[in-house]
Length: 456
Image 1 (cartoon, rainbow, N blue to C red):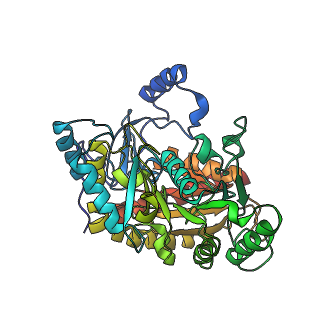
Image 2 (cartoon, rainbow, N blue to C red):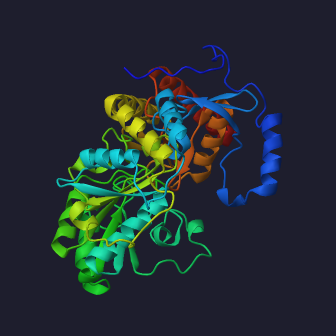
Image 3 (tube, rainbow, N blue to C red):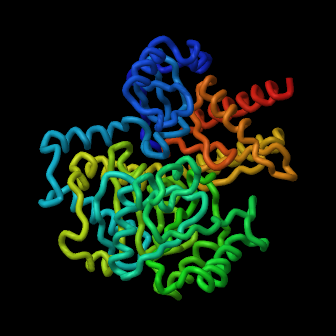
């Protein structure tokens, strides 16, 4: 059983419509007008949702409209919005002190590092470096890989997203707009295709094996000396790139390839970790042990935190001053993370499996009725639905996907895009069956409306 979360304000009855005003409502529009004067357009918001408050997997806007949240702050609100146990942990920590820099020590940081050591998917002890975000964690992982190997080059994957600071941006390749006008980023990164059997890039039925062969038999023989590669940075399940689940051959084969050439395998678990896929970390689905792992997003239910987790034998090589952080290990963030991990371990990771399987079944059933759905894929509550113009040619239906996401918002469901023509469902891990059913009803209704509009 999952911990019940009850809205503080009067909840909607089963028969009331979620959206009661024309969107955006007057209060929302007023804030949007103010926002446009003081915040940059680089945020690229998908639709005009102005949040007032949230409870569990539901959110309300400033005009009183309610929505089922299948975004969770981009897979951040793992335990739902304002889970009482997480909120209380933050309050308790705030009563003691708000900040102490990494020049000193405190109990909650040590507790969290001990907890990470207990759950990390490595067969030897790990040590943890504390940061504030996913991109900071990736930057730290890259610096560690260079430091311990003495090498400078890296391999990343097309479609990957690892952050927007200059080191992580060198790997990010899910949208060209993320790279435009920022060249040069960190040098030394070579991209290869991410294995996707639905949209193969290389020859071969198993794209996992094809990509591995390409790295070893082509790249290492032609342009990238293997003995100069410090690390291979990979998302176990690709996020922004389309919620792509790789073939089963890929990650184990990548681990073996790294072992052959003394390369650090770096698993970016910023989006896929902390129970999101039904395992604490996605690499566990394939029994793969990375050398370095990055974590953030769902780790503290919304508080800003990031971690570089690495084998102790590697992390001990860093000398004092080699890497540091002012706000990393903040006591409020550590308290939120400890409460989050307890809830995920004891309740919500199992719920992610149950509700994830249920949503996959419902979405696969939708695909049998709507040929615009080319593929449904995912693990746990990390699920993608790809829209195509034709099931045979698989031509991406980008505008259709965008229109469905927007229509779902106007019907009371929050979604986000990924890949070229996909939408992703990444609700809080405490999602209930009733809300899952309603979300599927709204999704189908939105597909129907957009389909009818296109055929009119």
